[in-house]
Length: 246
Image 1 (cartoon, rainbow, N blue to C red):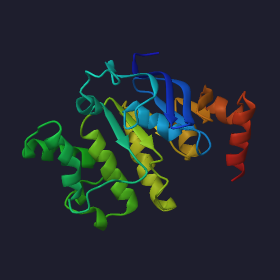
Image 2 (cartoon, rainbow, N blue to C red):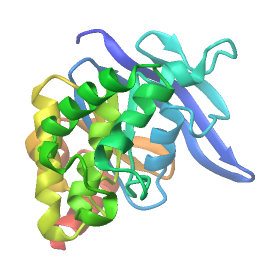
Image 3 (spheres, rainbow, N blue to C red):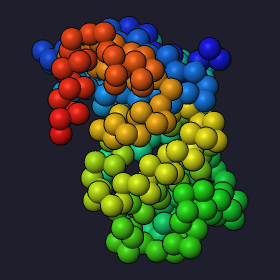
């Protein structure tokens, strides 16, 4: 296995009396695509949010690209540039153009000049197939296009790993394919990715490893073929059986 880009160890997360993550270990290698599946409420999204400290883990360690994210001396805003995150909702500024949304962090966080930020922003929009929509505002774009702008905004910062939290669940079915195509292209370019999603076809075809979570713990992990065709744990079998019936 090549050098780990993400190393989370013994992650616990409590929300009051609720114990949402129960000692989760997750290691992601460079260039690896890890797909996290499991029933609602199993802790998948909370785990992703702990990886970039949008949620503070109650205990455990998180290292990304060698940086200890939980060390109080770590500049979290600087460290977060290494971790792109794409959410279910696109979180775009409605009054700004697609290019403006993509370049905002480049200018504010990395201090690029407007011209340099615009060049990088246009390159990122081109990667997601939206260069010709650069001057459109979010309201003039389809949901799939808005999500691709959100991906462009994340990759413009040249992160070392991308986290995707249900990136297609708010989209109409016919728009899902365009977002999955961009994710597949990113995968082929060598980006390490952790994806929480219900897109099981994409998991089968694109993932290196599939992790099944239930009740705040990793129950089983393996290749897509192992998890989808011959899972060893009864809870995994029940979940896979259920999604295959739908």
